[in-house]
Amino acid sequence: MVKGTVVISTENCKGCELCIIACPQNSLQLSTKINPKGYRFAELKDETCTGCTNCALVCPDAIITVYRRKKDPKAA
Image 1 (cartoon, rainbow, N blue to C red):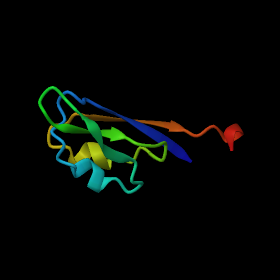
Image 2 (cartoon, helix red, strand yellow):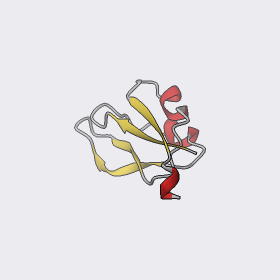
Image 3 (cartoon, helix red, strand yellow):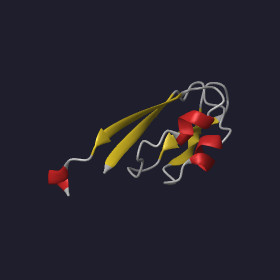
C-alpha cells in the first residue's frame, strides 16, 4: 500500500478549501491559525494520506506538493 504526505506553503494558502473537498481520505483540514495574509490555511490532519495528488491538482495557487512512499511491509 502506498502512503503519502503533503507539504503546503502555508504562507501562500488562501483557505479556499478546494483541497479539503477533493481529498478522498479526508486527510486535510483548515488550521485554527492564521497565516500572514490573514487566512486560515489547509494542513494535514492525520496519516491517512495515500498520495493521490487530488489536492495538488485542484489547488488554484499550486502551493501543495505531494510525496509518495511505499508502506514498509514490516510495519504491518
